[in-house]
Length: 178
Image (cartoon, rainbow, N blue to C red; front, side):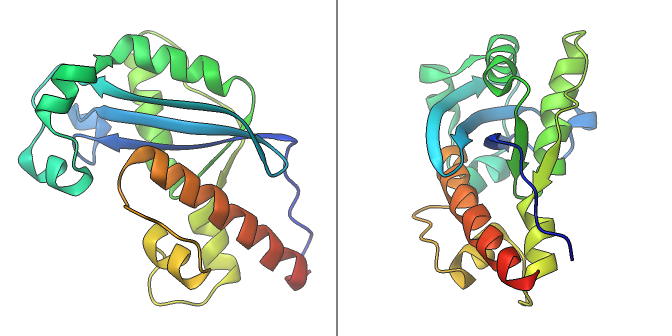
């Protein structure tokens, strides 16, 4: 297997949402990311997002973000998404099940009349499936297997930090497999 090659600048990101399907109008309610050079965090982005429509109690139960939190601190989705995309810039993007996150970001961009992101992506879920043999590849289970602490799953910044540390552990594992 060839060695895992990474761009020098990466953005590890995560989104929390009102549902699972952006094509049905489900929306982002929290965005978080960390920009990294090597193993050093050089920038951070985090905000609650007002989706502009009610959130189901089921979605709120998963991530713990309430309508009251959104009313108090939620930024308009248009503003938050555009600032988030500016933060990402041309960096490579990392996430656990990154296709899910990108589907929401890109759906919002399309709704705003913008082009979808075309940055290179790296999925820690795919890497975990490549380098680990475990019963479940959820971020929580991969983190536990790799002994990465995860204080509370399903809040965007905590998931970003966990994904970043999982990435570093998977890179080390990949080096031993080549």
